[in-house]
Length: 345
Length: 162
Image (cartoon, each protein chain N blue to C red):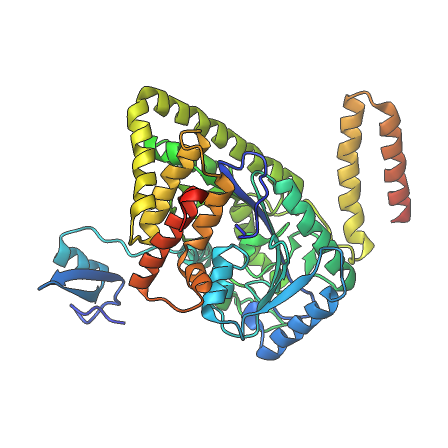
């Protein structure tokens, strides 16, 4: 979720973001497992030649991971503009990112390039269209590693075929509260769809946020895959909405108490960890989405979530902060952002 | 790293204990961890383990054939460890073993979908024709004959071009 992002896509109160990424490799360069530093530099140069001067997708800025401060790298990761792997790599990799911060092209990740677009709400079609456009431009200027049978050839066989991962980040507090999330996760697995935590592979679900994405990329076209994820997400969203209402009607006081307690804690806490912060923000987000809390905007809340993450917090503070300092700074930031404008310092 | 208790098996579990108000981390094998803590421990199971399980189950069946990519020199056994191929030619080199694994991973081993602009025409044409044939069937079913005729002409021109 990019900080600059203030657009509101369809179903944006439950579907936080839609993201599409394409994994691509070039025919004439060894894949990441066999790449030397020279190959990596060659690839960076190749991409610079292809992308420079191309105005079709706005101005692209190159974020060079070699020279970038670790805080800035992790901050890009927290905003989902680069992958955790890229943020950890020290040399010879980077990412082209557009001004709106909804398109990025990672270089020298697990695959030569990964093209990614991210939008608010359920908008996989739009995200794919952007990726597809960039992909076509690149494929006119260089030969991709492609096989008639296996499709786009990728480092790991799990990405063969379209090389595409389409994912939607969903906020599902009611499904978590009722425990129904478990059966949803199980049924998703049966149809080749994975549900994971917010930073993808191996990450835990934080703040009732789940990432729904396709597991299979070979044998299904891009359009079929998107239609499948789109359909599943819409079903999950309907389920979540119905459960929210059910829970609310069952015990209005209990429901509102939970929302307002969390809101009260966030408005008054002086020290807050990111774990606690995500948990409380999830309740507030639920309250705003259901119209229980009226003077907060969901897009603003999304931004608060991004800003309160460790590295981004240090980035906006302009200096490295230790663990305790971060928790204090986080509490301060959240108070400022959640208070109605007239009450702010 | 070896288990700090038995010093024999590899350490797979990090056990955190609070002793005299201080946090102490010890690294143990699953067996010792179970004995010491009286809790069932299972070492974390990563994505690579899962893939290795999938690939590994096959090597046992047809062991000795050593596949090697002539382009980048990667051996099949090396691929099994990392689950990453070395270059675009590896898939052809490892196909005898890898094909059935890919089928198990994806439930399919035939690409459907986008084809890059710059590939030889014998690759892109059949895909495009197949797509058009599906569209043609759809149009006929919906009795949109004018549309169907257009699609039929497009298929013909592609097949002649081929």
